[in-house]
Length: 397
Image 1 (tube, helix red, strand yellow):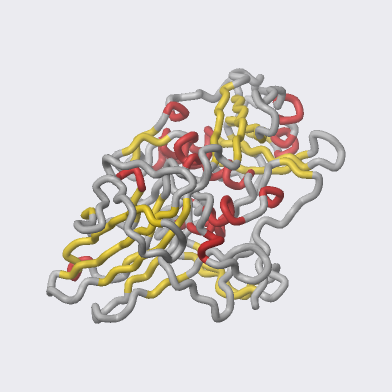
Image 2 (image 1 turned 90 degrees about the vertical axis):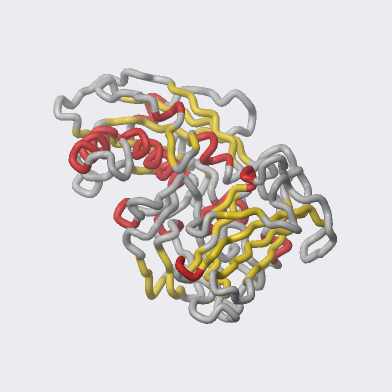
């Protein structure tokens, strides 16, 4: 398990992009409390201005947690406008309908917002922005609000990944790779990873890997050997990362027999470690048949599992789901004394199934995941590397 923790005595003083923001419960005149859940890599904490630059200019996700009783809230307002620097109060252009003087209305149940929802306005590359979330209460109490700043990156994204997908002859492609519906939107692997600053090119390659197990149960040895035989495509551009994935019925291994997927390292050449993943379509089919499609459909679960295992291949861990908290880690960042799981409360991609909310799950990345993609050196999370680099090593000050 990779390590995640909070700095001792360090509390960020701004509302963070995709952060966990806890609005004070009870009396409305208390300040908004902020909980940093995803610290930066080893070393002194970088300044907020350093942390929140180079975000994807085309789409930025904003998230918050609100622990005020819903009945007390009249409305939530959101606004965003251009500015000239971190911490600046200069008044630049508003972003679409998310206007400074009116503030865009957000459903009071809502805990997230996408920049694309500011209809009529698009983010610009290499531009600083200031944004605000404002709570208004039914009893007329003073409104509570918090502002923060971020800067978009250049038009070219940091990372491009070529995902080569194969499948066994007994497994169907189905339609989920073309997109699935969830919460009023259509989601693809391309759109899911785009919010993390990653351009994904998905290629369906080998459709009929011969089935050598009549019962569909393959050993881990057989599974680990798949990419050595079938990872044979060449990415279309130099520098594009290459990841291999396979749809396979199921595993015969005791630890992965009931898993929806698994990610594993293998060695294409000596001294190089490559990460690949498989999705157990047979297990997903069986699970959906048993529980029905009330909360998640077969196609939705295939998409969620693929994005989840893809995240593992980029060095994310279950502790990067928003249902997990690491309470305290030692100075080496390797031994953690407590981990609290909020079962059935998680909403983001890297949660394990038992920690997901049945109704609120979404194709979204947690703060920790986004911090990993934007804050960590690429050597910490690229899928092939000469040596293994720890993904999540932090040091308590």
